[in-house]
Image 1 (cartoon, rainbow, N blue to C red):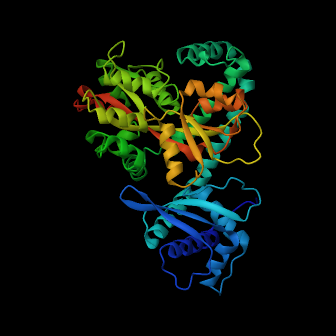
Image 2: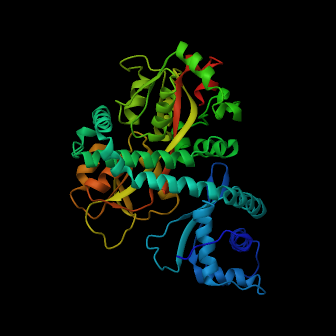
Image 3: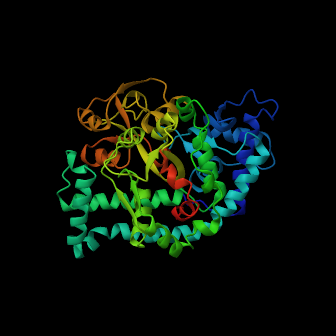
Length: 465
């Protein structure tokens, strides 16, 4: 695909095309019966903010030209605009199975409102913000790519300490229980690489320094239909003290004070090894001599939440991280011992099929996942159903560890949804097919703290680091 510019002319075309789509979907145009564009508004919480569209490039061109005959567009203009909405602005999700050279488009737009003018103003602001950050982000991305490409070479120069550390991590996280050869140094290098990539991606996406972006993500999580269906009531995913934190605190300018206060009150946290971004932050704080200890001996959030409900940890635990699904279990129980306090870096998920070649990479099939106990995978499955991305599918209850073996049997109808890093394991060692880009299935993670800690006014601002 040709390189797309992000100058004033391109922004004007994108805004024009987006405006036509929105006004069409809001019935603001007359005489549109002949234009073959299927659309539906999906309810997000109390408002309809997700627009699902199914049409062709030709129909979109006809729509735009029909209402501005003086400035006809080329089909490449339409295609480039859609890619801008997806890649540059991040508000379009492409749901097509076969993308290469296709004139058909099936996508959803994650919007701020159903009102056309509000969305256009927000897109204009987002465009300018992303454009100003583009050079900086490109520099960071190039540096990251160079680091990733040089990992094998750098590893050869200083492998002993890293290999020893990764072998311990492999045992502590129980990754060594999988039928995966992690005793081979090449695979340990790969393990470090995928963690590095996940951390960088999740820290970039979870913008905790933008109060507006951070608050929107929290609100979206609290209004998630699967979350509400299980909790049966509106629950807050961050504590009141967190909502009052200012930008200065979030930037870490109180690090010296944090070291003093937390060292007087050491904090022990339980974190799933799948929550790579959270592990990175805690490791950073620990290396700054802040007395935070953590263990990742509990590989699944379900195990963590069961221990939390029955207060059955082997030692006193001051906090832990949970996915949105397992958070709903704890919040519904209302034990009162722990309170959801912060949103942490998110985690990715992959939709996989078995290890045989597929004639058609369809999402439909028999999904193997946990559904009796709320799981993030089942939340994603329900999202796919509600978005009408699944039309012919069934579910079978299965533990995540059993799914790996089922995928190796080569049944073309089998599908599953797995979180990081287990979908990575199945792609590399089980030769499975990835049916989506993992970034399309990002779900939030939340830090729960013991309620006795929440009431301490000096702890919450310092833990926000």
